[in-house]
Image 1 (cartoon, rainbow, N blue to C red):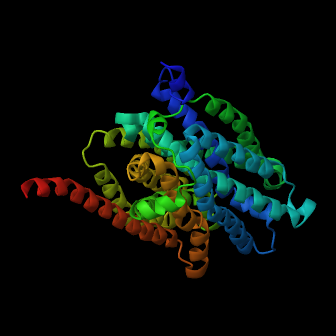
Image 2 (image 1 turned 180 degrees about the vertical axis):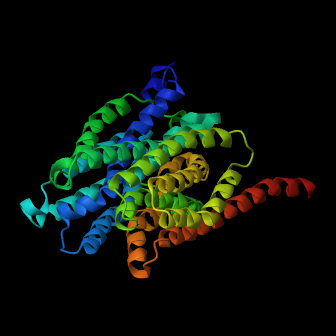
Image 3 (image 1 turned 90 degrees about the vertical axis):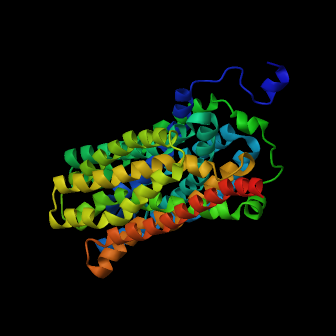
Length: 438
């Protein structure tokens, strides 16, 4: 291979798909780990950083800070996603994990409200904003990287984006089970909640090292590079794909964060021990981690990739109410495990196919920013605010089943987007046939 080709970024030898998946997802694990931990330990964090004298108000303020970070995600998608489409998938992945390392470090070392007063919630909120900005560009960069390296196995390769969501849930739940089992309430408030954040800090340097050794995708090397940030070009040429990418992401995001809310739901609404919710989410996370790659592999074998997601989406319309009814009517570890496991299995089928379908909506030159922007807008509106919406709905309606209404509503929105994608696909297939007949 020529020196010019090597200089352009084309590798001399293509590494194995397994190595590429590990390189892309180690950063994904790290960057999402902190978000899930925040949701899982919301009750404790509300005491440490947002004390108001009213536990419900403190929890609402905590989830407001949680949701606030999601409003900077679209900005991160534009900046980091645009940078990825100009400088390369590797460069974008390196930038996002470096920013996340700073945010997680701030979360781990910031003293509580009792020590530094109002500065504590201000620093935590700034850390959340930095994390939201970096994650905003991470999803599109990693999805583009995996889908382009996956080639004929695009569904399986890209599915690891959400399989890592299961791994993250598994890790965070494991920390939750161990810490809530071994530590007293005072110990958990004093220092125990920091343990998972310190663990997250240690992943950052490892992720930077692994990502520094990855190779650029052939699709990016061969594509024409945009000279400037391609946001205007993206919205001018591909407004419908951005809207569809947003739409099909909605139920995946709302389900993920409603499921991350289960430990809080178990304590505050069902009045169960903290370990119950963490145990249920641990099992659910394991099912998500295993199920997503299977769904992605399956999607590579079928002609109509969106059809799998349509079935899963209908299940999210029909079954959240019975799942929450089971938990509320029979509050126990067993009912929580059954409900959370079922909802995670549906999510595995849906989310295992989602990244590859999103990547197919955009050309290479705007793929990272297109996927990032559509996904981040969806997360900002329907994902990050899900725990806040669930807490508010229960407080206003006094109905413990109200989080299921949110899932049903968001599933219907995604179903409309999926049906629109199928309709557009049929039009594309039918157009050449009609032209030939004419």
